[in-house]
Length: 191
Image (cartoon, rainbow, N blue to C red; front, top):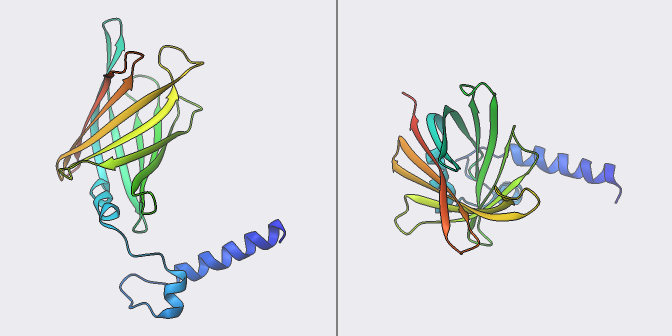
């Protein structure tokens, strides 16, 4: 099948899938084009949806710290994904970011990506829900903060303290096998 035919088939499938409206009582034909029922972790992701103001504090090493503030706007993509677009301008350098998060039923893991305006690197997240259901722990591999030619392992823990308050902490795995926290972001839902 040539590339044009594949694009055409994909467009037809997308159009058919868009014909299914939530709660419409799917029949057999609709079930063939509609996605699976969302799992509990998909529903958990909905708590991100909305507008947030945040303050971030970073440990830059050598006793240097940095504080910044900005906003996040999360929206749902169907019942399976959330996309968050972040921005900050108060450090004199505009910062933009995009976070995607979803849940893969096959692996029983959260999955996602992160890109931002200060890097060319595409971060790929893998994670799991904590035992209390208030946190998700995401791990990724990316450029080392101490050696740009090397890779390091990173961990981000996002905790919902309440429906309108979440705290994210970022850590990097050192050569000694210990996680060192270098970033804390506290976000509160707008109005």
